[in-house]
Each structure stands twice: as structure tokens, then as C-alpha cells.
Figure 1 (cartoon, rainbow, N blue to C red):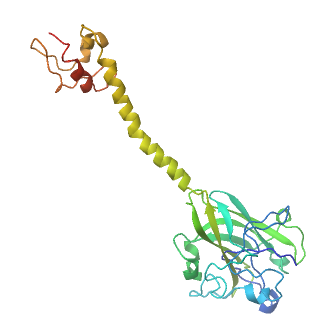
Figure 2 (tube, rainbow, N blue to C red):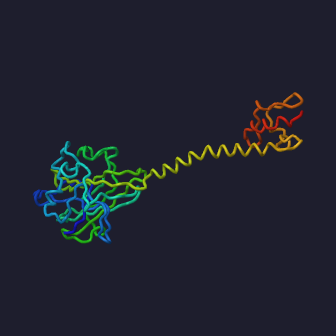
Figure 3 (tube, helix red, strand yellow):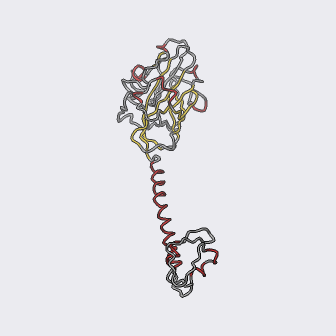
Length: 289
């Protein structure tokens, strides 16, 4: 059997009326799967590998009926982020799409079962209960089997689905997800889950940094415009620069006195609507009316 791994919270409902012993062996094998090379770089919490002869009993996590208080992650193997050198936690990039792989494991008759990857914002998966599923964000959804996403129809054939990480995720050491599916042919309900984590690299913190830099640059641009105005109007000439620079209508308040007028307290407006208090201050020594 191929040793592909999957880790997220996975739940499967309703394995029809077949005995539980014959059907209760289903889980995700890999959370970053390449269908061409069959390589996997992201595994589930506590994943033992397909070569472990006891993987059916070790890694199958069953929800019988609708147990409102049962944890979404198996407290024995998946209650906390446990990984090994052979089956490490994966790395991912915000906004990117990844593939989940799993083997059919004798469930050919449940090909239309819907599988989902769930995200519970702000929650530790080891504390999330079954009845909180409606609060999760769905990052991916697909049918258990179809010709485009399976490499065969045998028990150990691999199928896969896709999920997309939110583009707004910040860089972090651990992003927690749940793979969830339901076999809907058993009224009593039988569900399974597998939990996994991803280290987010190059997350939205980069965009936030760029946004922060842009915000920092804004006052600098404003200051540069103000600095550029001063040398433009403070021309070394014996004529009145205010008269030459703009028509008389540019000045809102005209002085009625003669001699050197102090314009420092007067606000003028050019035909473009720009405030020119600084320009008037620079001109006061040269204006004689």
C-alpha cells in the first residue's frame, strides 16, 4: 500500500448500513500532494504511515451518530501538533492551492460523498467540538471520487481534492485545518476526521509591510511638496512676485495700507485652489502698495 499521508480534521458520515468493522477505515494521507510524481510534503498530526500494519485502528477517528461534545481531532494522536521526521508538518504560502490525497479503501460505493477542508479561525483544534462545524470556513470542497481526480478504482488507488488558503493569512508557525467528509447513506451517521497543520511562509505580513511603508511615505510626499513651494515663490527679484505669479483675483484679502505689508496672517488662494500662506510670508518684504 502506498504511504501517502493526510492531516486535517476529517469527518465522514453515514457508511450506509454496512458493519462498522468493514467500513471504518478512512483518513487523509497527504495535504500537499503531487498527482504526477506522487510526492507528499505535508502530513497529518501523528501520522504513522501506510506501512504501519495497525494504521486502520491507530489513525481512524470515528464519530458515531451526532456526538455534540466529541472533539473534532482524535485526542490520542491529533489533539496536539505531533509530527515526526519521516512525516513532517508541511509548509505553505497564503493564497495558494494545495491537494489532499487519500486512498479509496473499499469505499467505491460512496463516490458522491462530499469532502471538505475546514478552518476554525482563532481556535485550537484540540478544543473544537463536533457541533461547532457550522462555525468553520470551508477552504475546499469536492466529491470523494471522480475520474479526473483518481488514479484508479482499486482499494489502494489514490484520489485527491483541492483547497485554497486565504490570501490574507499572516506568516505563522502553525495554521490549523480539518479535513471533513460525510458518507450520507447511514441515517445514524458515521463520520471521520484527520487534523493537520501548515507553517505559513511569505504570508500577508509582506503585504502589510508594504502597506505600512506606503503609509510612512505619504507624509514625506506632503513635506516635499511644501518644501518645493518655498524656493519657487521666494524669487530674488525687485518686482512683486505675487503679481507676476498669478492674477489679482488670486488674492482674497487685499491690503489697504502702503509700505511693507506683513502677509504672515493672511491666507491666499490661487486659481488652482491651493493654499499659499507660506508663499505670502516669503513675499512680504518685497511687496509695496
